[in-house]
Length: 238
Image (cartoon, rainbow, N blue to C red; front, side):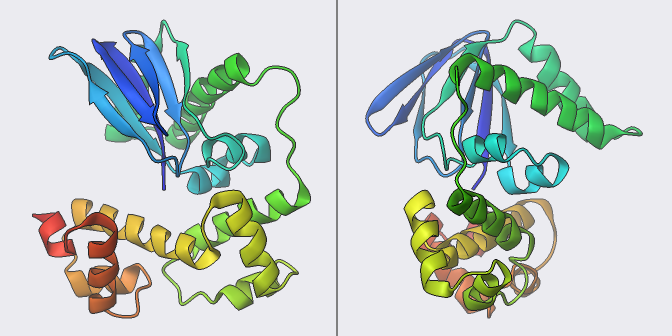
């Protein structure tokens, strides 16, 4: 459920979205909004790149522009954005170094660099009037943020709807209209992504990860993980 930002250092790569091919060449940066199914084909053995995964809903905690959030979350824009970026490698290296060696105000530095990348991309592609953010869409994006932040809890969609001054059926309708999935499916996806991260970056056992991600049981997590990724959590960790 993350957006991808790719900067090509050497060679080139083709991104395919719904049978449309997008060629990204050396010195170009590409944003693939979250939730956009795609495939990647490296076109040369010398292919090198910087790759950044950006969670739109966690990012919105630091920066809350609904227009930017709508684009990177794949709600208002559903195809890759590509442009030349002559100093791209320096920007990605600074982001990388800041993550590896955190300094005072590091989060501000990271946010500033990411915002620069995104703003330059969007200025190049979103000309004229910005995509209109309706009240319905603002509600959908606010619910996304809420579910992302609380996926580890036993969240009920009916209670979530009440929190946002609507009812479960209307919320499900507008959520699916704008994202292609129900709030329940989105919540499960958030839990699965969190489980992926914990399986990769922690030593918690499967039961502990299941609890931290909000699944009702380890077997529930295993079942849903296999359905989504084709392997069990244990196999994924190996």
